[in-house]
Length: 406
Image (cartoon, rainbow, N blue to C red):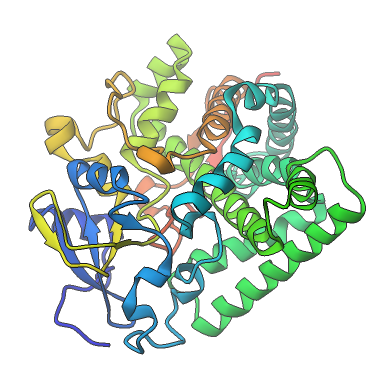
């Protein structure tokens, strides 16, 4: 499939810069993804909110509603097919979506997440002990911002420590738009096989973890098929750690670029505000996975025909001057966060939001308490970012530790 549409991402341009340029054209712009595949990008706060509010009705997530994926228009080896083709919670609609969301939502209530705080704090302390021991020049991405969310999500799902690294590698490979199609499909197969083995193991040897609880719901209540269970595990493991990895990385970069905001956070213990502003200012999710129009629809004044793919660009909508004024692209932890779409809106509001907030707040508070002189050992403009337009964040954050506190 070939089109005359503008390419996304543009060659040699940061995906966010491309989207900000497109936003000057219209709130919603039709673009061409790799492989010549057309889709629409929602780029303003208003457009994003309208689409999120229309989930399960006007905008559907099941890829069966995207004719181009099934009529031969999109080749079988399209690089993004492994992500788009479905089979997990985020690609379900209506009653199926509500049923599965209800089953797993009980594990992520604010009270249950709050009960995890002592264990999360212990993990943070242990990781920072290792960071301090590694000394000046340590890279915080593998040592801290990747390690913490991966450790927490694996404990939550009862996944052995020795499997953390390969889960992280599978996720990074799947989400990178530079991954060759054959590698993406092979990675997806490997991950699915691992999750099926995990389900079988938890059926034989149940534990006090979320996977065992979901297996019990499947076996006792007949409410969850094996494929649905694997699909739930897939999205929760991938989305449940990847976004927090990048949230922490972006926060550290933003605070390095804005020492006045770091001083405010330290003085007022405003780490929760740092988390909320980071989610707005540089969302871990560059663009959501596709939604599909159930009918002709107009979004922010732009008409989108039925059966089209639409991506919500969180990073562009988060710095929309139409919503946040002239200071939209400034990092300001004193900003009023009313209306922030960072954790979604409507029926698909992020189930894991309480956990992401808790992890990130504790991690940042402890990091800067123990390492008050922490600074980047690299120019912020030289930081490499992950090659994805779904989730994007720093790949490396070498730092000077300064004097460590106990």
